[in-house]
Length: 125
Image (cartoon, rainbow, N blue to C red; front, side):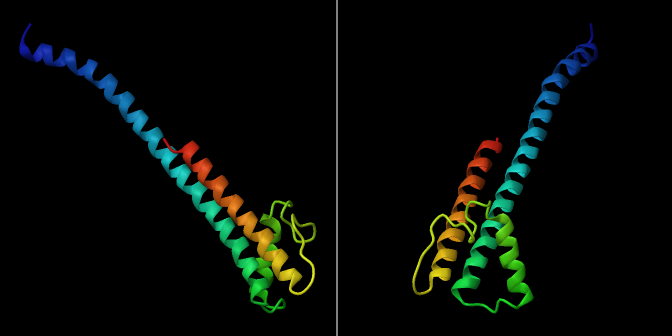
């Protein structure tokens, strides 16, 4: 057998591990990108909830369309558990609405960040 024959015989054997490694690398890239997307989505949701809490804290004009949008989005993303109509903790007295919004939307933001970080760690290779 010549050297060229030996080289041809070993090329097929060398391709199999490379193909497997290439596939593993592709899967790792997909998982990495998915983990980033999950983290970014959770951060965006937390940001919306924090922005809504600040609209209450800063006593923003509730008739403004941007303020309405942020508050409506927060109402959708509060998971129903942190809703201002049925809050986890409701405050009474002076500035009760502001305190309730800051506490509940702030807590919901933290929950989204924790869930996002945990999911990111689970998904990432």
